[in-house]
Image (cartoon, rainbow, N blue to C red):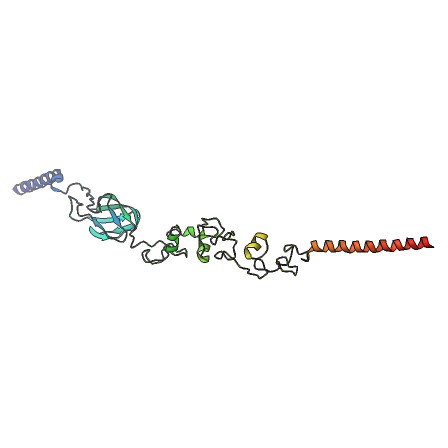
Length: 287
């Protein structure tokens, strides 16, 4: 009986102790996980940096009361993933960036963000992406026109589209004017009265006579004849001698001189006929 009593007592004590321990479990076991706090120490909100210059990233102010281990993730809405180190540096592209920091303790996570601006660096900018910085590139926009010429003629050396523009309305683009050496702001560079777009020699006010037909190029353009073809209408008579240089049906002989000649001949023939008729009448009377 004594042995049985001990067994009962031990069993009762064991059950009681386990029950008591279960009731106090919220006190002796681990508590509910507390989310970490994400803190961006650098960069600061509205900070400004330059392209090509490293931006500091610092998340050392982030904390978690439950654990000493935090997982860090940096990103930019413009450049994407930026790394997973608490403190580091990285250069960003020019533009406005929303920098996002995510921290996690393995169970919960939190985030923080700041907005910064990265300005183009004059020493790093490469407008035409040819691998040559604008500070060393003689043609920043890659339009085939040197920056110095564009600046001298009030064009934009960073805008490749202005190569096709025609500010003076002479029919020549800015690229054409550069190639010819004419003034893109003056439709008649040599001042000879013929626009650069029609002038065969837009830098020579005297023009000359390109086809050697005796008529200056400017005059041929005004007349509608070809300054590079001595016989514009192809009638075998050079424009300089052809009274009708655009009419191949006319031979080019001076028709106004032919008419008086024909009239004179007709007049002479008429007088001869009258003389003959007069003699015939006189003879008849004599008979």
